[in-house]
Image 1 (cartoon, rainbow, N blue to C red):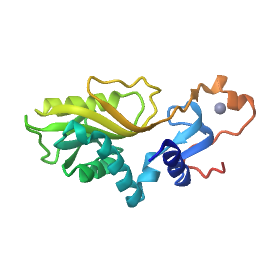
Image 2 (cartoon, helix red, strand yellow):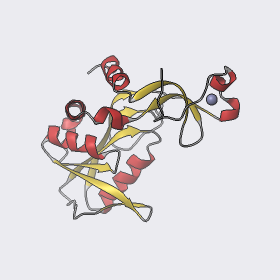
Image 3 (spheres, protein in one colour):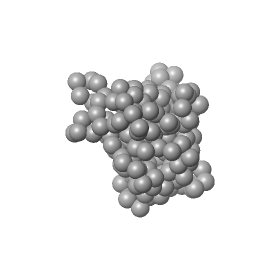
Image 4 (cartoon, rainbow, N blue to C red):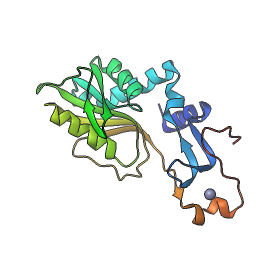
Length: 191
Ligand SMILES: [Zn+2]
């Protein structure tokens, strides 16, 4: 899938919006990305999983590990494409960990899969979970890299596409300066 095809897919499912948004962080942005809206379509999720699988098969992963909740659906589809297990880590008392009997062994080659990488922090934390459980991390992957090139790891990282979504402090927001009304993502938006 080309970048244009992916962007079109995201726009059509409302997963990528152009406008003027107030994010949960309080910052304003000219774009909004919500991967769950594209992943709600199982056939699309499967295609995206296959595309990530093609990019990462060469790393020889034996298991996919994703952080809950955002990484679970796409992690499962990547696992399906690669023919390997797909497990997830979840937060308890503030710490990301393996629960539900999920386990890794020292022969496991772990691919960390997320929906979107923003700062790389949660990818790094998921890698630490894999190592602490005895696995070896061979790579990381996401549908979207919105880090602007700042998310770098000591293993190969593959994303299907990169996108920059600029954020602004409300008092210096150029969209506010133009008098455009700001909306909260999730509310009905006419683009
Ligand atoms: Zn604004």
